[in-house]
Length: 300
Image (cartoon, rainbow, N blue to C red; front, top):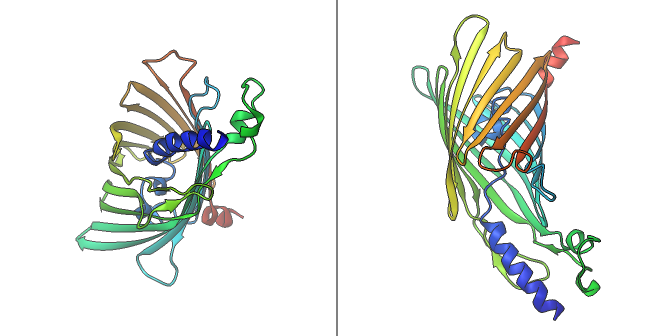
């Protein structure tokens, strides 16, 4: 009976997990590498970026995402960059871990028009945290079902992107969760294949005056079995140090962000909420911290 019950949970959860969209991030103005691997080494090189995001803060078990990333130029290869990122995402009993290394190459195609290709490769693993769920004192269930979680085996994964750049304009497309093989779970004789997602983005950095910059950004996300999503955001920057942003996302989601850059240190916060749901039930918070190592060393 226990095994049958666990199989039912597993099959339901696996179907939900493979259709998940790559975790959403709103720190893209500070960390463009989070938009596409093409930006590794081509935007804010020698930069360490850390972030923590909590979605649905008014609901117990809402999604939580932690990120750590670094990108830089390759010193021994002109026009090439590299990066690495680790992403841990958890929602209820589901958790995912991504660990990817990136390579980018910048090609001049005409005048000041550039095409930047990016490729990430690494590993992916997911887990069903049954122990946390069934050991909740508010949930009564046969104790025989609380003695194990379900872990997947490590799976190879890759991302690919291409970004066109001309002066302050950028436009790109990226494909995530690209895999070449099925993955297996350690304790169940079944397979799954995370579905590929795509993301298209376009932005333009407009220097309004010597002190003021404005950067509008448009993002379209989607994938197999995933609803397409449209997002528009804009950031205003004063003296390259003080940043403020607003966003709108499909589903009636509104958000705002603020960031400060001081001597190679970046601190940011983003907040959004759904206008279609009670205010306290669907609030999303994201805090970010960045360090530009080159700027910090120069300041010493």
